[in-house]
Image (cartoon, rainbow, N blue to C red; front, side, top):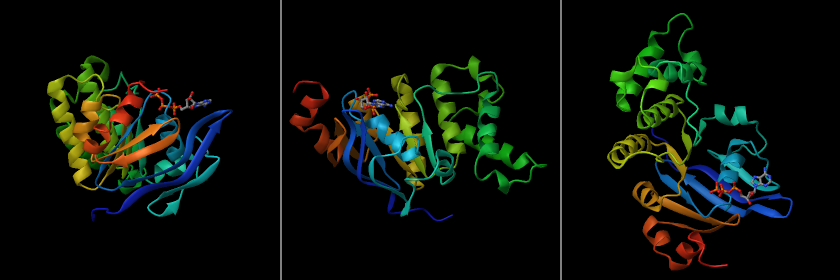
Length: 250
Ligand SMILES: Nc1ncnc2c1ncn2[C@@H]1O[C@H](COP(=O)(O)OP(=O)(O)OP(=O)(O)O)[C@@H](O)[C@H]1O
């Protein structure tokens, strides 16, 4: 399969109000294929709302949302997921009493691509799932119950489940939280492999060291507005933005 290039997702002039609160305020944002875009901003800035708008769980009041150039704004969440837009949550949502291998297999069996494997022959999915477990370093734990592995290993399993979705856009909510330092590098190098293969990743991250380390671009949000989008060095060295981030300005 050829590597996707260009813009994966584009939001243009998107607004969403909840009563008097402006959760998205004329947001224009693009997520390129083959890049990690970090969404950074103080609590309540509108990061989760942005994810919900992209996945179709919240309908914007105005603006356009396009995926690979096609408008998705009025599609259902299921139809959006079927286009290859996957989301992970802070809560890992694993099947705790299934094995590590089964946790990945169930995702593959439900994926939009499951029709590629004949129902009677699960060997193809199984081989695919085992390959993913090797990729995330869990091959030796394949027969353990998810509940019995460490939290760090569960994070890698959660990552394996995202890989199994075979999505082209990944929306990740604090993917590295709770990982010890030695696991970060491995976790992010697995993410990088997928990005290098062309996936567009957008992640919400509160730890600025993590976001600096993993992101190619950062979009800084405050009160529903994208105040700036650019390189991690430029955004995170901007005194005004960091003051907003740490609540040092009104
Ligand atoms: N369903 C909703 N109903 C009412 N207000 C909402 C709703 N969803 C979000 N909001 C409000 O919209 C604003 C943006 O919220 P959002 O959760 O998107 O921010 P966030 O940047 O993800 O915050 P955090 O970092 O704390 O998770 C907040 O003021 C929030 O209270």
